[in-house]
Length: 477
Image (cartoon, rainbow, N blue to C red):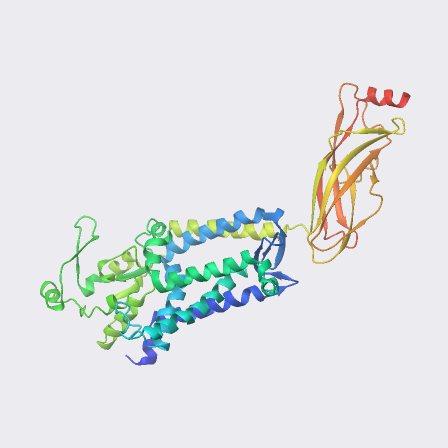
């Protein structure tokens, strides 16, 4: 097989393109701002959340459940459809290991002989190069740690804080802590993280079915290497044959050359010919290795990225089935709900609390006052002047109730809050019930004077009107 043609059929190069694209996106995305807002930013410093370049206050975290639902549904959908495709193609752990093991140690410093042999130990007498490799990775780990923090502390603030490190030790601690973990993880823990630490390996096993796309060895063509349980056809982990001669003795038509290139190249140290295994991360390095060997013989690879049923029945996998459709529909609904909720963003926030006193009389009972504590918040990026109106439940003006305090609009700077004591009053007889106080539902329409159509919120509250006999008694005093 010619080199150019070979590369077209090799998953490794496709994964490299995905790795490069994801790395660029992860590094560049925190720097992109539209109207001062980020694509995603969970900023605890300023108590803000940025999502799809729209800024939300922490009080608007009703969006977070939808994000979490989408995250889990996306993982379920991806796993059911493509197995551990996240692990092999998207996971930062895999990307970092490829950078450290294949790029730095193998290609750059030649500590390892070949990226085609993940099982071989490092070359002897390379202690100096090992130190250089760790130093290079330390720099990259610090960049990765800083990049992670940029989704919580935006870059424009991050580098300002670095100028006064003693005042921002928590932020620096997180960066250094993440970098230290990445150094230990990538240099020492390696793929053991995927096998023993990552919980996803355990979760994904219950989501597989016969149509899940994964790395599959075609034992009908290649020959059966491992013994299987007769009832379940699941490998029991014991080899049936140990070399090509034994394989051909059992199955003269077996195409496997027993070169074990698929075993040597596996980063998690498994033999894909044994069948589906918990440790497989769907990196498809084994499929690449087999493609090269079998391609030299003019035959297709014995290892495919396919479903078990499709390989057995020599057909294409069934992508549309109940489980994938159900997850797809649920994910779509959650996505639509998220976008819909994001469009209902309020460009100002208003909380209304009543005071302990239900009402009070003024001017010998001629007016009835109700006092409120209202918290106004400007969630915009610029200063506005705010005021409000009193409406009935049908959102028509409540002319019988007027605003006694404050008497005029008030300014509020970008991102700031202000607490106002608000007094609503009436000099009209709103009810003549002498058995109890009358609770009248009202609506407060708060808005920015300079943009009342866009920046406006409605809040329901009540106006308490006294018993009619109490009112008459107050007026006689």
